[in-house]
Length: 223
Image 1: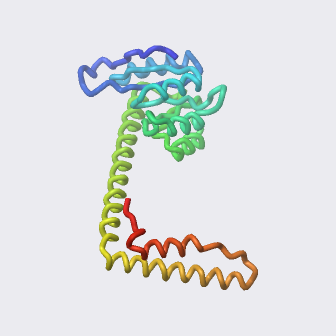
Image 2: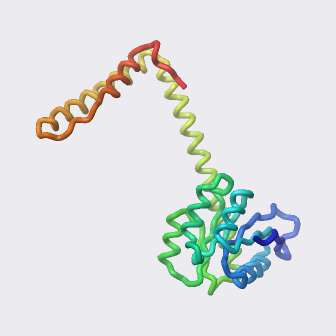
């Protein structure tokens, strides 16, 4: 893997932080070409290079990146496999990603986007302007996704705390237990009806035990 190389654009000056970027491509020629395009984006970029999937795996396990450019066609696999690996790493699971391929295969583009890639470029038509647009779009989209995920996690925690507080009230707790009992009774009745036509009956002893625990003040514990 090549050492980081600063490829800051001429008019970026001392603006926002340097974009920590990783480029995966098995072709040294294509890596050099994309590096030149990075210089024409007028973005401040620190570029690490990986020529193999193994080098990328080592890089993303050791460093958090802002953006990763992924070559789709690789000797040991493809870009979708690499994307999946990145999304399951601790440091780069929510990094901005761009899939790069040698042709304009729209099926590949659609598949990549559906699998969580933030943008798509073709080598044949790529230039500095296209790369800049893709980079800024991917970075913005990844940031929005992170903010939405954080908001959802916050909402879940608020709901959990609210439910816990509500269930501490005896009246609310009794209503919940009563509703749950009715649903379990309906499920048991349906199972009994199905058993008459020789459909295997599921064991609901765990549900009954849960009802007992919900009704027992000493056993009802909030985490």
